[in-house]
Image (cartoon, rainbow, N blue to C red; front, top):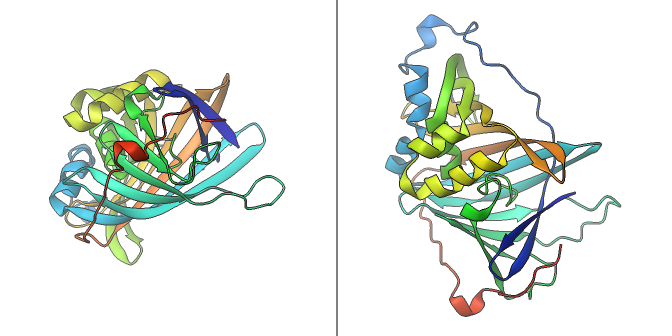
Length: 274
């Protein structure tokens, strides 16, 4: 288990994140079938994914984050829903069992908002009825990996920085016909062109990751909505480079989503143990 420590108000925050290695795929348009390419310019299409999600309003979401460093490989999974108009979401994140096989971890509830991540059942000395609030603009990764899941809207905003994109072909995601695009986005560029709510966190990520180039695979439906996206990150933790594959699956567009932020009295202000 990789533990990443960050300094925020109230002391050091140690956030457990999963580890894993996803097979990398290069950016190439050689396999595209001309008659399949009906979505226009690939770069324009993937860069517009975030706007299409906002137009869709909301969706349910499933996430998977696999990280690998040294000989360690673990996976964190999440499930919830996201309101793209209000830019708020809620996920229940499941940590993997400990190395001895014991499943000692309660699911962590995460509230995703512009500039902040709220976590309940964080453990490590935090009272069971309290939330932890983390300013995502202070995180080395901008919360692209810290919470064990990539904020779905941030994952789409990251595609605004795409510098390479190619149409691969038709595919199927959970029974929905989609177009598969593969390419490379740039975190620093995404931070410059993202909507205001995402700029701070992406700018922090641009400084913290081992490299700005992020390979991706994006699957968009006929309305241009992002149905699935996989990003492959590299960041440095305790002097080691960690490979991260973060996958977000979106479905059930238009579903009602209610996210209630905790009151100030419910937020833990003490020191959080690693």
